[in-house]
Image 1 (cartoon, rainbow, N blue to C red):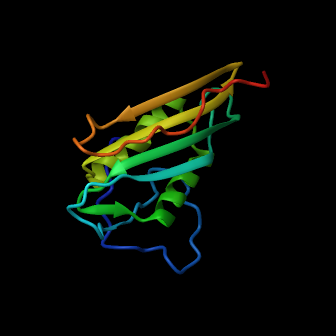
Image 2: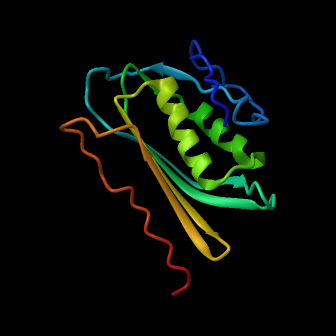
Length: 157
């Protein structure tokens, strides 16, 4: 992912219309809307159990279960734009660490939540599963932060 950050969009651009999948994560636009419960301390969670990107070495698909938790500030991310953004990684080559941390950092930089964490639970590559975690700092005091609920990869055993 590039270091350039997209400006916040003025509001939902994709709701109620057919929208093609963005060609790349850098071209994807994330929509943010006002937090309907601004001032309330709460956690929102997105789970993407069928996330895919490409291995930057072999070009083969990599699969992950992503869990994104955040405590909203003034805005929340509009879910259709998030789905399109995550879908744009299907043709994006990146190491697990770059992809997972890059998604978290972009959401944090653009949405400016009170707190955000992402867990990337990647399925085995070369026989080794890779789990990647990033968070923006310590969660705010009083925020209920449940376990992400994804067990470590165990194979068939």
